[in-house]
Image (tube, rainbow, N blue to C red; front, side, top):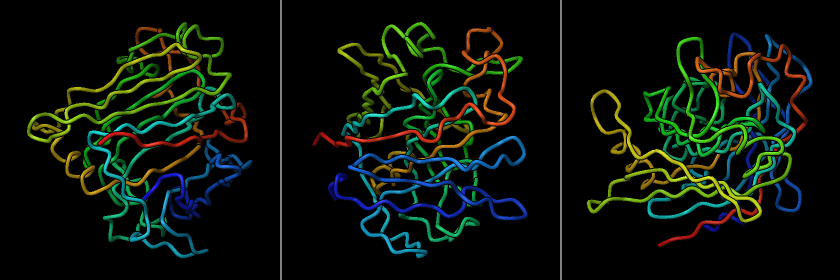
Length: 288
């Protein structure tokens, strides 16, 4: 299916605990898809919107057979994102999950699955972007691998560092390559080797003729290649998913890290720095 003619299905529930967490709003206007955030702060976080591309959309009915299933092996997926509203502690994400093949309704009621079992069901997950105007992560996950293998910039803890493929001088508000106060273009490619197996996730962020190129070309999980499962998942077709959320525990993504080189030394207490929405548009798939 043509990605530009897909429908957008919004989740009603962003995650589960003893009670349902209601998801935030998602708007589509003139081809711009914008997940938003609820005002209420619950346990240090604000619930954000999550949405999926699908061939059709019926109110209050979630049918996994309608979810988009794109095979992106040997193809390039390109789009534009605007994360100028997303400060430290906010996460604007576009990722692929194996929802079209999931037969379990999940605790969120919409057949959502991912590698961290947010709604109780695990599946392969490829995070093309998780980030804000200070940090960026692109991560491959087999279904059982919540940590995954990633690239980008930002995050860490007292004894570890997140990826450092570029710096805050290159990427961030007023950055000399990507100025995140303005929209920029994202491209992700999934090349294969001579046997047809996925060999890398190659990323390119581009703005005004300048670009950052990085990626993941090695992935081992439990002593085996993580590319094997992801090759099968991409071949079967994965569902583009969009979300926006915040937390007082986002330092894994944007924190200073052990080396102190990450962008956000302190976690915001209430998500107040998160603007109303992040945006995604100008979607295109090219390749064989």
